[in-house]
Image 1: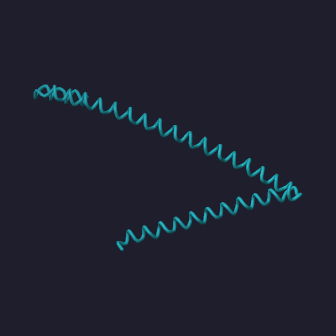
Image 2: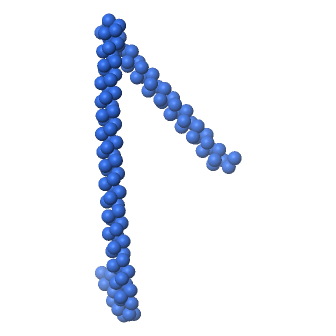
Image 3: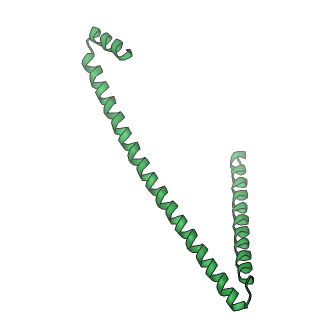
Length: 120
C-alpha cells in the first residue's frame, strides 16, 4: 500500500525510474545481507559444534586418564580406595587453584577499570 502511493507520486513527478532503480538496489542489498548473515551463522555453528566435540572428547580422555591413575595408585599402595582418594584430592586442589587465579585476575581488572574511570 505504501509503495503504491510512493510509486504513484513518483510517476506524477516523473521520477519513477529513479525510484525503481533504488528499489532494485535495496532488494539486492537485502539479499546480499541475508546471504552474508547465513554464511556467518553457518561458520559460527560449525565452530561451536567442533569446539563442543573437542571439549567432550578432552573431558572423556581426562576422565579415563584419571581413572587409570587411580587404579594404578590402588595397585601400588595395595589399597582399594586410597588411589581414588588421592586423585580426587588432586582434582579438587587444581580446581581451587584455578578459582583463586581467576579471582585474582578479575579483582585486578576491576582495580584497573576503577583507575581508568576515575581519570587518574
